[in-house]
Amino acid sequence: MSEVKQVIVFRHDLLKSLRKGKIAAQVAHASLGALLKHSDRYWDEEINHYRINFTFPKDSILDKWLNGIFTKICLYVEDEKELLELHKKIEAAGIPCALITDAGNTEFHGVPTVTCLGIGPWWSEYIDEFTKDLKLF
Image (cartoon, rainbow, N blue to C red; front, side, top):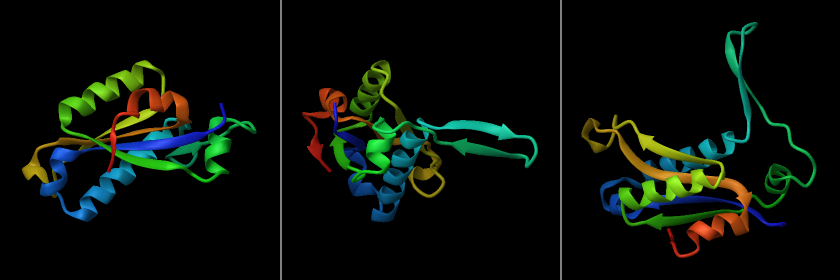
């Protein structure tokens, strides 16, 4: 195993109703949310804030991704049902992922809405098992 990537999967049925900036923000949330699954987060009483720590050995997933070319692929599924099914499978496989739900404050008329899924960074061949049939976003 040598290639590492991150995949963002967006709901195709939302594309016509969202502004481009909102789509970009949701994709960014998914990317960062999935990356943070690799971190150690803890409350620091001394400064009264959370701290986030990334430690990783040479040639690990994070080393290859963060110090490599940051491969990121954007794909899509048709609807929420398909996205939730994919999330369930990815999570069951132990691959770090983040399901993003928009709060509905600026879009979706105040209704929280699942928009996208960030997967990895993780070994490409494991992600591909679940995403190889999805189309580019």
